[in-house]
Length: 70
Image (tube, rainbow, N blue to C red):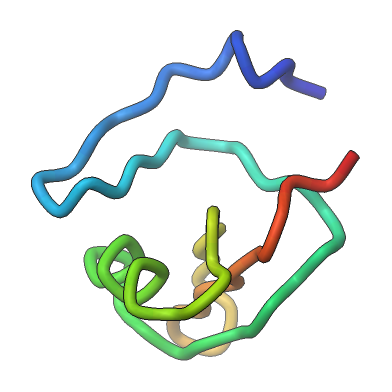
């Protein structure tokens, strides 16, 4: 399990940020079929979304979270 401070974040031009291999289970807000490149803007456009994880499940699935799991 990674501590949040140990994660190397990448910041996108739209203000979203991401890191490889990080997903906190629980507190899921929604699941959306989308390309990985669209995850940041999709999360920003979704009220309550504060982080997301993308998988190749079903051709590409974004899972948005409404808070970090404790």
